[in-house]
Image (cartoon, rainbow, N blue to C red; front, side, top):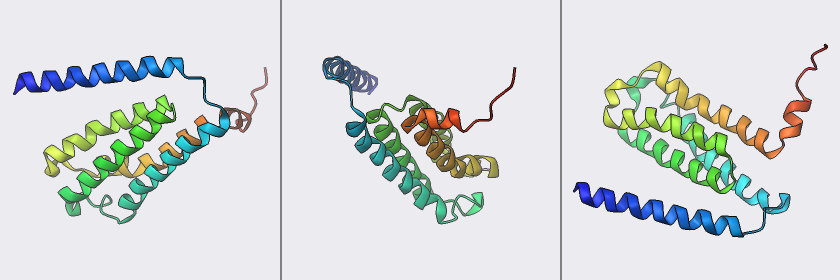
Length: 148
């Protein structure tokens, strides 16, 4: 079984390398073409928002395995869309949160209020990251100016 996992990993690495080389040869995205991936990220994030809005993540005792798996799949989708939109910061946030989600998948009893709050707050933080990456100058212009 270890060899099969190694082969699958190697195949994914080769595929990623081929995609990376192909991406270097393509012309850079224009702002108009960049809108579609950002919209896809927002739609994927809305799926997580829908899962969290059911209230299941507010009480760790009521959290079911199906809800955790639905959250994990939606998180994977957000990460994929963020990759297409070249949102590295959001991809890193998805990777960091995936650790918490995978621990919950392995042991649902390890759910705590802190973990559930991190999962629910991710939607808010992800929206801010999307807005910041879509219009970075607007974020910096809204900050108060420091006098020297």
